Each structure stands twice: as C-alpha cells, then as structure tokens.
Length: 401
Image 1 (cartoon, rainbow, N blue to C red):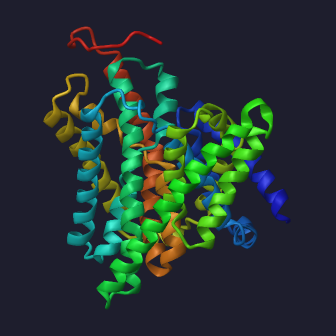
Image 2: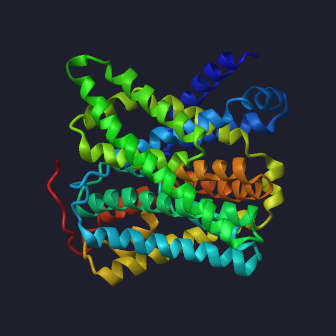
Image 3: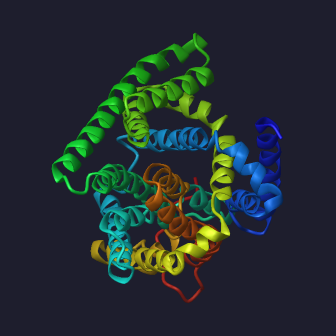
C-alpha cells in the first residue's frame, strides 16, 4: 500500500470515528488516537502501518506540533490575560504542585532516575485546551468561572512548554554526559539560548514578511505555511529545539504584527488534518506490549497527575481567594490532557532511545485515560458550576456574549 493511499484512508476513517465519539459525548481526538492504537496492535494492519509510517513519523510530529505551538504563542498578546496576576499565579501554583507530586511519586515509589522522573512530571502538566473549549461550547457554559478557566488553560499549557523546553535539554545532556557536569551545563545553555534567539529573529522576520499579505501581494495561506516550515527546517539544520523556536516565534509575531488574525485563519485551514495524522501516528506507536512493560508506571502517572491537579486547584484557589473559583471544580476542570503531552512524549521517545520508550508508554497511557475520562468530568463540573441547584449559593456570572 502506498503512503498517500494509507494516509487518505486513515484520515477519512478517523473523521467518522471522531464524529461517532462526539455523538456519545467524548472528544473526537479520543477516536483519532484509538484508530491509531487499533492499527498499531492488530497484526493484519500493524506490519503495513509500521513500514509505511517509519519514514514520516518525525515530520508529522514536528510539523503538527509546530503549528499548534505557533497558535499557542500567537494567542499570547499583551492584552490576552484579563484576569491579571492572580490568574497567572493560580495557573503556576497548580502546575507546580502537579509537577512535584508526579516527580516525587516516580523517584520515591519507583526509584526512577531524576532526569526521567523530571520529564514524566513535565509531560503531566498540560491541560487540553481543545477539549476544554469543545466541552464549554457543547454545554453552552457561561459565567466568570468559564472565562477564568479558559485563561488558566492557556497559561497552564505555556507553563508546561516552558518547563519542558528548559528541562528537556538539561535532562538529555545529563543522560548523555552524566560524568561531566560542565558539559551538561554547557550544552544545555547553548541549545536553549540558540533556540530562543532563533525564535525571536524568526518572529520579527515573519512580522515583516506578513505585511506582504495585505492586498494579497502574497497569498496568506501559502506564505504562512511556507515561512513556518522554513523556520522548522532552519531550527533542525542548526540543531536548535524546534518547540522553543516556534513558540517564541508565535509570541513575538503576535505582539509585533497587525496581521495576526489573517495568519491564524490561514493556519486553521491546515491544522485539523495535521493533528488527525499526528494522533493516528502516535496512537499506532502505543502497543499492548509497551503498556504491559510499564507495569504500575501508567497507574502511578494517572493517580499522581489526578491528585496533583485536584490538590493544585484546591491550594491555588484557596491561597488566592477568588470567590468565582470553587477549589474542587478548578482541579476537576484541568484533568483533560493535552496533545502537547503526546508531542512531548514522542519527542522524548525519538531522542532518548531506551529511556524515551519508557516515558512514552507511561505518559501515553495517562493521555488515553484522561482523554476518555477528562471530558465527562469537565462536563459534570461545568453543569454543576454554571447550573447550580436552587438551594446553592449565588455565583458571579458575566452576561452572554
């Protein structure tokens, strides 16, 4: 079977599977992952899929997540966070508690090496903005809590990206240069600094380039896709971290260009098919054998992340005393896990070899669990929060937009 026939067939199957899952109140991306998982675990498909996917996995993962990261960065305008410092503090506190709880669990209970435990903990931080926004839309939820939740989710993912892109080079270099701490510091700083600088330069250059989109001197769609892929290629060429480069590029662009909406509309024309392929490819890489090898690791990741989000929500909301945020409701609302986590896991798998396989299996088992359970729990929380019983207390709400 040729790769184009396979990819086209899988996208159509995944779309219908996603539609089915949406009808039974699950996020469509759960269906996409399950399509990949089935293909990768049944012998009639797995040998064909493994052979055809082997040459495209890196490109699908890198390009798909780059567009997602650019969109995330482009959302971070100076005026984006209406909730101010308290919302940022809430997001940071609950992210830190989740990170520390997962980290301690794997160091204390499983005696995992510190670099591996750190990466597993970082992968556990993100919340899925797509699931949160889809559930809010489907439930027609409104109010101040919903607005605050949307802001926290965006910041939560940004914090996860900052954690991962700073810690990954350090952990990678510790594993590769364990006997030489000087090399660890040297290589880590070089990679991070080069990546940040490239992201800043690319952001300013794209801001200038996007002026050509006015009056369609250059088609916005072709120009946007071309420039982002060019930036990915340059980052790979100079061995920078693509995830850092593209995220920084998006932030700089959104704050220096008047063409932000034009560019985001162009990306929306291609991102859905990229993410479907991304989820299928990574779902197919998760085998029953790999899950069995993790043993209790997957259960520990699920349990510690669950408790981390709940305790993080309770601690942050009580500490900062924002009355519109019930402590338990916040933690429950942050349980859906992000596609960013899948990329982090696949990135670790590609670059850390043996250790990466373990990280991938443990964290992907958590992603599947929280994809299935996260949306229903969020929906229950939103209904409880935005449609309280008659005997409940009053809640501050904002007028419908």
